[in-house]
Image (tube, rainbow, N blue to C red; front, side, top):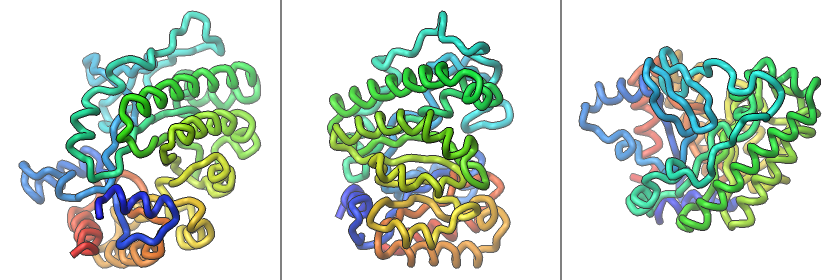
Length: 337
Protein backbone atom coordinates (compact mmCIF):
# COMPACT_ATOMS: atom_id res chain seq x y z
CA UNK A 1 0.00 0.00 0.00
CA UNK A 2 1.40 3.40 -0.97
CA UNK A 3 1.80 6.32 1.43
CA UNK A 4 -0.85 8.15 -0.61
CA UNK A 5 -3.35 5.35 -0.04
CA UNK A 6 -2.71 5.26 3.71
CA UNK A 7 -3.24 9.02 4.03
CA UNK A 8 -6.45 8.84 2.04
CA UNK A 9 -7.74 6.11 4.37
CA UNK A 10 -7.17 8.42 7.35
CA UNK A 11 -8.78 11.42 5.65
CA UNK A 12 -11.75 9.29 4.61
CA UNK A 13 -12.37 8.20 8.20
CA UNK A 14 -11.13 4.63 7.73
CA UNK A 15 -8.78 2.59 9.91
CA UNK A 16 -5.27 2.55 8.39
CA UNK A 17 -2.81 -0.36 8.53
CA UNK A 18 -0.49 1.85 10.62
CA UNK A 19 -0.37 5.50 11.73
CA UNK A 20 1.09 7.61 8.90
CA UNK A 21 3.34 10.56 9.62
CA UNK A 22 4.73 13.77 8.19
CA UNK A 23 7.40 15.55 10.24
CA UNK A 24 9.17 18.83 9.55
CA UNK A 25 12.30 20.40 11.03
CA UNK A 26 13.69 23.92 11.31
CA UNK A 27 17.03 24.79 9.73
CA UNK A 28 18.76 24.47 13.11
CA UNK A 29 17.21 21.04 13.73
CA UNK A 30 18.21 19.86 10.26
CA UNK A 31 21.81 20.93 10.94
CA UNK A 32 21.73 18.92 14.17
CA UNK A 33 20.39 15.89 12.30
CA UNK A 34 23.09 16.12 9.65
CA UNK A 35 25.75 16.33 12.36
CA UNK A 36 24.33 13.11 13.85
CA UNK A 37 23.48 11.09 10.74
CA UNK A 38 26.13 12.50 8.40
CA UNK A 39 26.34 15.55 6.14
CA UNK A 40 25.35 13.53 3.09
CA UNK A 41 22.11 12.22 4.63
CA UNK A 42 18.86 12.98 2.81
CA UNK A 43 16.64 13.89 5.76
CA UNK A 44 13.44 13.58 3.72
CA UNK A 45 14.45 10.06 2.67
CA UNK A 46 15.53 9.20 6.21
CA UNK A 47 12.26 10.28 7.82
CA UNK A 48 10.21 8.75 4.98
CA UNK A 49 7.34 11.24 5.25
CA UNK A 50 3.93 10.55 3.72
CA UNK A 51 3.34 14.03 2.27
CA UNK A 52 5.17 15.87 -0.44
CA UNK A 53 4.39 19.58 -0.19
CA UNK A 54 4.60 21.78 -3.24
CA UNK A 55 3.99 25.51 -3.30
CA UNK A 56 5.28 27.48 -0.31
CA UNK A 57 4.11 27.20 3.29
CA UNK A 58 5.75 30.50 4.23
CA UNK A 59 5.12 32.44 1.02
CA UNK A 60 7.03 32.83 -2.22
CA UNK A 61 10.12 34.96 -1.59
CA UNK A 62 13.23 36.17 -3.40
CA UNK A 63 16.50 37.26 -1.82
CA UNK A 64 17.10 41.01 -1.94
CA UNK A 65 20.33 41.07 0.07
CA UNK A 66 21.30 42.08 3.60
CA UNK A 67 19.53 39.03 5.07
CA UNK A 68 16.25 40.21 3.59
CA UNK A 69 13.69 38.52 1.35
CA UNK A 70 10.72 39.98 -0.51
CA UNK A 71 7.58 37.98 -1.17
CA UNK A 72 5.26 38.27 -4.15
CA UNK A 73 2.87 40.52 -2.18
CA UNK A 74 5.69 43.03 -1.63
CA UNK A 75 6.31 42.17 2.04
CA UNK A 76 9.93 42.44 3.23
CA UNK A 77 11.11 39.67 5.57
CA UNK A 78 14.12 40.14 7.87
CA UNK A 79 15.85 36.74 8.08
CA UNK A 80 18.58 37.85 10.50
CA UNK A 81 17.30 36.03 13.57
CA UNK A 82 14.39 33.84 12.42
CA UNK A 83 15.92 31.80 9.61
CA UNK A 84 12.93 29.72 8.49
CA UNK A 85 10.17 32.30 7.99
CA UNK A 86 11.63 35.65 9.02
CA UNK A 87 10.10 38.74 10.61
CA UNK A 88 8.02 41.30 8.72
CA UNK A 89 9.83 44.59 8.17
CA UNK A 90 7.79 47.74 7.50
CA UNK A 91 4.25 48.07 6.14
CA UNK A 92 3.14 47.49 2.57
CA UNK A 93 -0.25 49.08 3.33
CA UNK A 94 0.36 51.74 6.00
CA UNK A 95 -3.14 53.14 5.46
CA UNK A 96 -6.47 51.27 5.15
CA UNK A 97 -6.69 51.67 1.39
CA UNK A 98 -5.75 49.60 -1.64
CA UNK A 99 -5.21 52.68 -3.84
CA UNK A 100 -2.02 52.15 -5.81
CA UNK A 101 -1.52 48.57 -4.63
CA UNK A 102 -1.28 45.82 -7.24
CA UNK A 103 -1.96 42.22 -6.27
CA UNK A 104 0.44 39.54 -7.50
CA UNK A 105 -0.29 37.62 -10.69
CA UNK A 106 -1.70 34.11 -9.99
CA UNK A 107 -0.01 33.01 -13.22
CA UNK A 108 3.46 33.94 -11.95
CA UNK A 109 5.68 30.95 -12.88
CA UNK A 110 7.32 31.12 -9.43
CA UNK A 111 4.12 29.70 -7.95
CA UNK A 112 4.47 26.47 -9.92
CA UNK A 113 8.23 26.15 -10.35
CA UNK A 114 9.52 22.57 -10.40
CA UNK A 115 6.16 20.95 -9.73
CA UNK A 116 6.29 18.46 -12.59
CA UNK A 117 9.62 17.05 -11.44
CA UNK A 118 8.59 16.80 -7.78
CA UNK A 119 5.30 15.11 -8.65
CA UNK A 120 7.04 12.59 -10.91
CA UNK A 121 9.56 11.76 -8.18
CA UNK A 122 6.97 11.31 -5.42
CA UNK A 123 4.04 9.46 -6.96
CA UNK A 124 3.68 7.15 -3.95
CA UNK A 125 3.20 10.12 -1.58
CA UNK A 126 0.14 12.24 -0.84
CA UNK A 127 0.76 15.37 -2.90
CA UNK A 128 -0.18 18.70 -1.32
CA UNK A 129 0.00 22.21 -2.69
CA UNK A 130 0.68 24.66 0.15
CA UNK A 131 -0.63 28.20 0.34
CA UNK A 132 0.97 29.82 3.34
CA UNK A 133 -0.11 33.11 4.95
CA UNK A 134 -3.36 32.47 3.18
CA UNK A 135 -5.87 34.95 4.65
CA UNK A 136 -5.65 36.61 8.07
CA UNK A 137 -1.89 36.11 8.10
CA UNK A 138 -1.60 37.66 4.66
CA UNK A 139 -3.78 40.54 5.85
CA UNK A 140 -1.58 41.35 8.84
CA UNK A 141 1.66 40.97 6.91
CA UNK A 142 0.40 43.76 4.63
CA UNK A 143 -1.12 46.00 7.32
CA UNK A 144 0.87 45.08 10.44
CA UNK A 145 -0.48 43.08 13.38
CA UNK A 146 -1.62 46.04 15.48
CA UNK A 147 -3.40 47.68 12.54
CA UNK A 148 -5.04 44.37 11.63
CA UNK A 149 -6.84 44.15 14.97
CA UNK A 150 -7.79 47.83 14.95
CA UNK A 151 -9.12 47.49 11.40
CA UNK A 152 -11.74 44.96 12.53
CA UNK A 153 -13.32 47.71 14.62
CA UNK A 154 -12.47 50.87 12.70
CA UNK A 155 -12.51 49.86 9.02
CA UNK A 156 -14.71 46.75 8.66
CA UNK A 157 -15.54 47.39 5.00
CA UNK A 158 -11.85 47.65 4.14
CA UNK A 159 -11.15 44.42 6.01
CA UNK A 160 -13.82 42.56 4.06
CA UNK A 161 -12.62 44.00 0.77
CA UNK A 162 -8.98 43.06 1.35
CA UNK A 163 -9.89 39.60 2.68
CA UNK A 164 -11.98 38.97 -0.42
CA UNK A 165 -9.20 40.02 -2.77
CA UNK A 166 -6.70 37.79 -0.94
CA UNK A 167 -9.13 34.88 -1.23
CA UNK A 168 -9.71 35.65 -4.91
CA UNK A 169 -5.97 35.36 -5.52
CA UNK A 170 -5.82 32.03 -3.68
CA UNK A 171 -8.81 30.68 -5.59
CA UNK A 172 -7.14 31.58 -8.89
CA UNK A 173 -4.00 29.73 -7.78
CA UNK A 174 -6.04 26.68 -6.71
CA UNK A 175 -7.74 26.63 -10.10
CA UNK A 176 -4.38 26.71 -11.87
CA UNK A 177 -2.91 23.98 -9.69
CA UNK A 178 -5.87 21.63 -10.02
CA UNK A 179 -6.25 22.09 -13.76
CA UNK A 180 -2.55 21.94 -14.62
CA UNK A 181 -1.51 19.25 -12.14
CA UNK A 182 -4.33 16.72 -11.64
CA UNK A 183 -1.97 14.49 -9.63
CA UNK A 184 -2.20 16.92 -6.68
CA UNK A 185 -4.29 15.28 -3.95
CA UNK A 186 -5.05 18.24 -1.69
CA UNK A 187 -4.61 21.91 -0.89
CA UNK A 188 -2.93 22.92 2.37
CA UNK A 189 -3.76 26.36 3.78
CA UNK A 190 -1.68 27.96 6.51
CA UNK A 191 -3.39 30.69 8.56
CA UNK A 192 -2.86 31.09 12.32
CA UNK A 193 -5.93 32.17 14.33
CA UNK A 194 -5.34 30.64 17.77
CA UNK A 195 -3.75 32.02 20.91
CA UNK A 196 -2.84 29.92 23.94
CA UNK A 197 -6.47 30.30 25.01
CA UNK A 198 -9.19 30.73 22.39
CA UNK A 199 -8.93 32.70 19.14
CA UNK A 200 -6.76 35.80 18.86
CA UNK A 201 -9.59 37.87 17.42
CA UNK A 202 -12.52 36.16 19.16
CA UNK A 203 -15.02 33.84 17.52
CA UNK A 204 -17.54 36.55 16.57
CA UNK A 205 -14.90 38.47 14.62
CA UNK A 206 -13.59 35.27 13.03
CA UNK A 207 -17.12 34.32 11.93
CA UNK A 208 -17.85 37.76 10.47
CA UNK A 209 -14.60 38.52 8.65
CA UNK A 210 -12.61 35.33 8.11
CA UNK A 211 -15.05 32.43 7.86
CA UNK A 212 -16.91 33.65 4.73
CA UNK A 213 -13.70 33.74 2.72
CA UNK A 214 -12.51 30.42 4.13
CA UNK A 215 -15.73 28.81 2.97
CA UNK A 216 -15.26 30.25 -0.52
CA UNK A 217 -11.68 28.99 -0.75
CA UNK A 218 -12.42 25.57 0.70
CA UNK A 219 -15.47 25.14 -1.53
CA UNK A 220 -13.25 25.82 -4.51
CA UNK A 221 -10.86 23.09 -3.39
CA UNK A 222 -13.76 20.65 -2.99
CA UNK A 223 -15.19 21.60 -6.38
CA UNK A 224 -11.97 20.34 -7.92
CA UNK A 225 -12.29 17.04 -6.05
CA UNK A 226 -9.34 17.69 -3.74
CA UNK A 227 -8.85 17.16 -0.01
CA UNK A 228 -8.67 20.22 2.23
CA UNK A 229 -5.97 20.37 4.91
CA UNK A 230 -5.28 23.38 7.12
CA UNK A 231 -2.70 24.65 9.59
CA UNK A 232 -3.59 26.98 12.44
CA UNK A 233 -1.55 27.22 15.61
CA UNK A 234 -3.12 27.70 19.01
CA UNK A 235 -6.43 26.89 20.65
CA UNK A 236 -8.97 26.69 17.82
CA UNK A 237 -11.23 24.10 19.43
CA UNK A 238 -14.27 26.40 19.43
CA UNK A 239 -14.34 26.60 15.61
CA UNK A 240 -13.73 22.95 14.74
CA UNK A 241 -17.45 22.42 13.94
CA UNK A 242 -17.35 25.38 11.52
CA UNK A 243 -14.19 24.03 9.87
CA UNK A 244 -15.82 20.65 9.39
CA UNK A 245 -18.91 22.34 7.94
CA UNK A 246 -16.65 24.20 5.49
CA UNK A 247 -15.19 20.90 4.27
CA UNK A 248 -11.88 20.63 6.12
CA UNK A 249 -10.48 17.09 6.12
CA UNK A 250 -7.49 17.54 8.41
CA UNK A 251 -6.32 20.03 11.05
CA UNK A 252 -2.70 20.72 11.97
CA UNK A 253 -0.74 21.21 14.29
CA UNK A 254 -2.95 19.71 17.05
CA UNK A 255 -1.02 21.35 19.90
CA UNK A 256 -1.16 19.35 23.15
CA UNK A 257 -0.11 22.43 25.13
CA UNK A 258 -3.45 24.11 24.38
CA UNK A 259 -5.73 21.28 23.21
CA UNK A 260 -6.86 18.01 24.79
CA UNK A 261 -5.65 15.77 21.99
CA UNK A 262 -7.20 12.61 23.44
CA UNK A 263 -10.64 14.16 23.84
CA UNK A 264 -10.66 15.89 20.44
CA UNK A 265 -9.53 12.80 18.55
CA UNK A 266 -12.21 10.68 20.22
CA UNK A 267 -14.87 13.35 19.69
CA UNK A 268 -14.21 14.07 16.02
CA UNK A 269 -12.82 10.79 14.71
CA UNK A 270 -14.59 10.05 11.44
CA UNK A 271 -15.52 13.72 10.95
CA UNK A 272 -12.07 15.31 10.63
CA UNK A 273 -8.51 14.07 11.01
CA UNK A 274 -5.75 15.64 13.09
CA UNK A 275 -2.07 15.99 12.21
CA UNK A 276 0.42 16.72 15.00
CA UNK A 277 0.23 16.09 18.72
CA UNK A 278 3.82 15.59 19.95
CA UNK A 279 4.72 18.57 22.14
CA UNK A 280 7.37 20.88 20.67
CA UNK A 281 7.03 23.33 23.56
CA UNK A 282 7.64 20.88 26.40
CA UNK A 283 8.37 17.22 25.68
CA UNK A 284 10.76 17.50 22.73
CA UNK A 285 13.00 20.32 23.99
CA UNK A 286 12.83 19.64 27.73
CA UNK A 287 11.78 16.02 28.16
CA UNK A 288 13.94 12.93 28.40
CA UNK A 289 14.15 10.25 25.73
CA UNK A 290 11.79 8.21 27.91
CA UNK A 291 9.29 11.10 27.89
CA UNK A 292 9.43 11.33 24.09
CA UNK A 293 9.02 7.57 23.73
CA UNK A 294 6.02 7.50 26.08
CA UNK A 295 4.23 10.40 24.38
CA UNK A 296 4.94 9.05 20.90
CA UNK A 297 3.68 5.58 21.79
CA UNK A 298 0.52 7.07 23.29
CA UNK A 299 -0.21 9.05 20.13
CA UNK A 300 0.42 6.05 17.89
CA UNK A 301 -1.87 3.92 20.04
CA UNK A 302 -4.63 6.55 19.80
CA UNK A 303 -4.16 6.79 16.06
CA UNK A 304 -4.56 3.08 15.36
CA UNK A 305 -8.31 3.52 14.93
CA UNK A 306 -7.82 6.27 12.35
CA UNK A 307 -8.32 10.00 12.20
CA UNK A 308 -4.71 10.79 13.03
CA UNK A 309 -1.43 11.58 11.25
CA UNK A 310 1.62 11.73 13.51
CA UNK A 311 4.04 14.60 13.77
CA UNK A 312 5.46 17.03 16.31
CA UNK A 313 3.02 19.87 16.93
CA UNK A 314 5.22 22.20 14.90
CA UNK A 315 8.45 21.95 12.96
CA UNK A 316 10.96 20.44 15.39
CA UNK A 317 13.14 23.25 16.71
CA UNK A 318 16.92 23.40 17.05
CA UNK A 319 16.75 23.33 20.85
CA UNK A 320 15.54 19.71 20.73
CA UNK A 321 18.22 17.22 21.81
CA UNK A 322 19.20 14.95 18.93
CA UNK A 323 18.45 11.91 21.10
CA UNK A 324 14.82 13.01 21.32
CA UNK A 325 14.59 13.49 17.56
CA UNK A 326 16.05 10.05 16.89
CA UNK A 327 13.66 8.50 19.43
CA UNK A 328 10.42 9.53 17.73
CA UNK A 329 11.76 8.88 14.22
CA UNK A 330 12.75 5.34 15.18
CA UNK A 331 9.34 4.65 16.76
CA UNK A 332 7.18 5.83 13.86
CA UNK A 333 9.28 3.97 11.29
CA UNK A 334 9.25 0.79 13.39
CA UNK A 335 5.48 0.50 12.80
CA UNK A 336 6.10 -0.78 9.27
CA UNK A 337 8.80 -3.29 10.20
